[in-house]
Amino acid sequence: MTSPKSRHWALIPAAGAGRRFGAERPKQYLDLAGRMVIDHSLGLFTEHPAISGCIVALSPEDRYWPQSRFAEHPYVRRACGGHERSNSVANGLELLAAQDGAEDEDWVLVHDAARPCLHPEDLDALIAVLRNESVGALLAVPLHDTIKQSADGCKVDASVPRASLWRAFTPQAFRLGLLRRALTKAEANNAIVTDDASAVELLGLQPRLVKGRADNIKITHPEDLALARFFLQQQGRLC
Ligand code: C5P
Image (tube, rainbow, N blue to C red; front, side):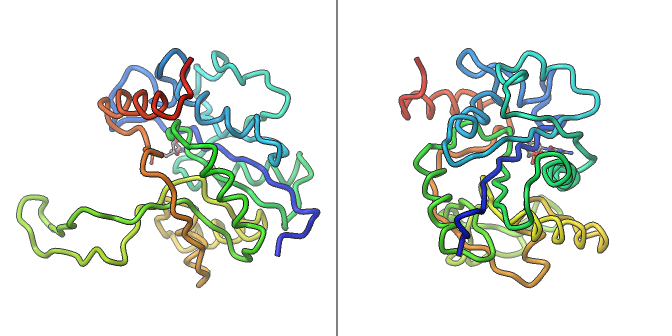
């Protein structure tokens, strides 16, 4: 279903302040094995032959991007980040459409700057699925823990059946035109969407789940950095 002319673009939302992490700088700019977290996250896309270009969405107050090894990269352009992740993604899509000549039918792979351990095989698997996909697809992992529901954050109200539950990862890939429409509608409805698929689901569509690797973690807490270092080492990606 992908027309031979459809291109693939990468969009990296990187405008978060990382308040939960609590470091002196946003988590995407912390050191991870000698490189900034965002440089690990972005590197796979700049090297991938199927990717036509990359957009990074950065906070207007960002002071750290110039230290990125990709700051002057010819395939990487900057968009202005927004208040929420969905606003940052929407701004990146506008830039792609307005200045990079991206078409509505092109695929946009949205990948969190805070996920530095994406494995090249998972990226290839996602791109391969798009050849036969009309709505879009995301990397995800089935949930194995037992899930508890608690209204007050102290006492358990219920256990949630986990058989059909997945953890949504990134990249998440959608056609540029569809994702723009989905995010516009979500914003108009004041819907809270914490990933791109959620916005597309609000249109009544069903993105495809692509089972990915569990090591594609999002850096959220300080202990995640050591874990990410270990995963990159296991993947043979550290010199
Ligand atoms: O906060 P969280 O970890 O869920 O953010 C996921 C990704 O979205 C991060 O890479 C973060 O930098 C980005 N983000 C953004 N704009 C925001 C909030 C988060 O680009 N306003």
